[in-house]
Length: 392
Image (cartoon, rainbow, N blue to C red; front, side, top):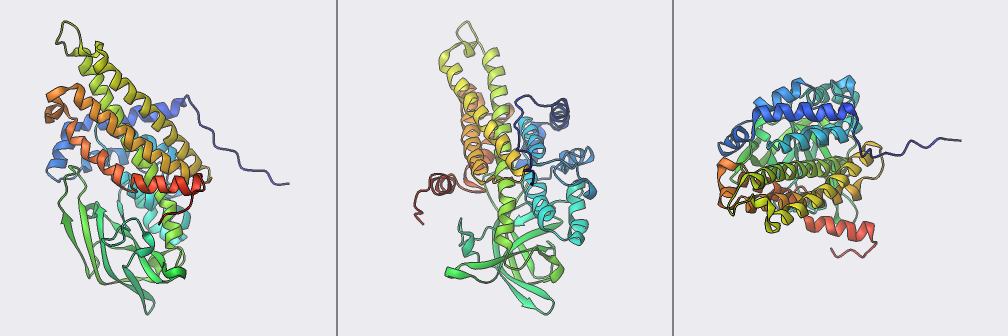
């Protein structure tokens, strides 16, 4: 008789160790400060001075196995790190991609040589790895990816383009999804490769966006970029299945960013509403100010619970697709509600950079669109959770 693995348990009261981790991460992020983070974003600079102390204290690789210089914990703990730095006003997209996607994919599917080669940099935080899946003409339909990897001797040759790829300027490697053949119903057979960002034939162009963040967005052009066979992650044709195992962590960590920014916004709004006096009492005493903030708090706490559930299901090896999508949808909506109502509570001051709110709007708004749109999440829930027919 086999014994089933223990079911994941959501602790409503966190352990002393997790509380201490939250406090430590928050202390580092607050010391760096939102004003500094925002200034770097406006200047399209680098947040390495925040990344470095987080790495030195072991927080950037908490979900990576200990034998590869990580913390040996799970995505639940990495989501705590992401939420706390975001709650300090310093939301960092690289955690979604490097320890989140690349770390998960390499841990689960990398060969021992590949883990030893690339996972140590992620576990220690010394290195950052980007993920390149999005293409100009594919949109949300991954089966339409056209960047092609063709056999050449004992390796591959990549040709095509990717767009809206984050943080390439800081990347040690690029995890690239490419078409390696044709599957049934016209769907491409996809595979994952690790590519050097300075490989011959690979060029890039920065995309000018309204998002003010330390990470730039890039369009990448692959002109017969050669990669050796030892850079294929998992089996040929398994890229979509493997890649999707990295996309649930991306959704969960996107939710953690939105939850953290929501907390940051409500903390600032509550402090302001307690201090700002216009009609002989603090404006927070007026229900027109208090109720919208209270309603936002309710939405935020619901999103945080779903995010915790999704992370625990993922760490337990259970099916986390439904919960991850729901967490991302709830958190993006709640984060925007919190931020918008915090700006409204500040009146005109809400649009001043001195108050540190308006500059965060774009990153939360981005996460309502990416890494998967709200509409595609609703399609997923309709089909997979409710059993409704597919419309596309």
